[in-house]
Image 1 (spheres, rainbow, N blue to C red):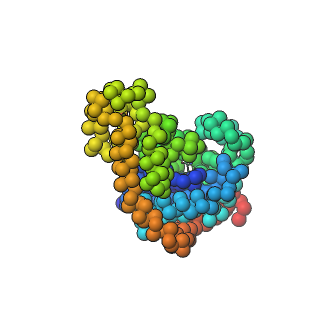
Image 2: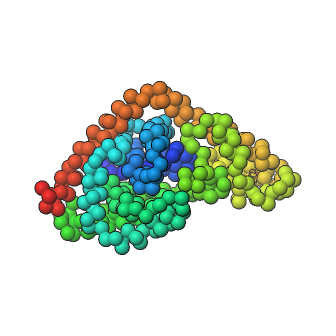
Image 3: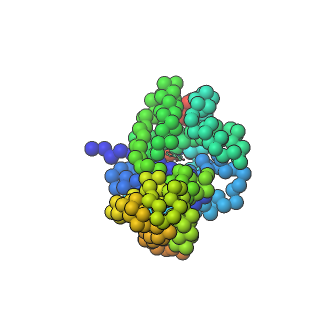
Length: 327
Ligand code: TRP
Ligand code: SF4
């Protein structure tokens, strides 16, 4: 049986966080054992919204690479690279931009919602509108069969299929239509109870030191109706409890029971959670330290990944240019 190709990317906007870890990276680590996997750092995508402030971009990219490798992505089992190291991505994006109607892009739900959400940034740019066209280029470049993503990305995968269909019908059947591999994971709440996201500044980073984790967890929103320890709690509305369900499933039933009976105080509950998270991240932090000491190792892994990705990318781009009459 043919092994299917899987591709996915992650934006290095700030430090990668626990939401990224459980929602994407841990899933990738499982997939690398079964499929022909390509995973990359979507640095060009990061530029579509954070183009004004790039002073930390290089460091964020490096940290993203370290986080991915420390969390278990294995260059022996998957291809890991950085998007901008392969100019083919930008070039295929450009070719696709010729055939993508504006109306398709203006209709993408993430387009308007991000503009409304990120009020501090001017996203009325050409590059930001083209975000999903670049994503289509990422996916179709490798003729990926499956694309592991969260719910919010489904419209981008649909648009990718539409671009592929249009290209195939205008020129030549080059691009197979990719399918999403929906990551069924409820999104992790952030410190403020909203979805954990860099744009809300409510994250716990994978690389946060133990003291930082303790401090952040102590500020997490709990059951707002619970003022005193003697008030009975409602774990189902508490973000701390959500974390227990994800990171300490075995303990979560007991936590809920004690909370409901007012036998557990929030301060203790948070201290215990911080310990759990610190323990969960300990092996990742250990590997992190090794990688931090060896920047050449990271460079070597990304260079090897670029080389492997290039073999396919260069071939696909050639086919696309031939089909479009350029060569
Ligand atoms: N847009 C994706 C996100 O924000 C990141 C991404 C870029 C991606 N290119 C991709 C995901 C290609 C899957 C396939 O999560
Ligand atoms: Fe949340 Fe724990 Fe407090 Fe209950 S005891 S409200 S689960 S922090």
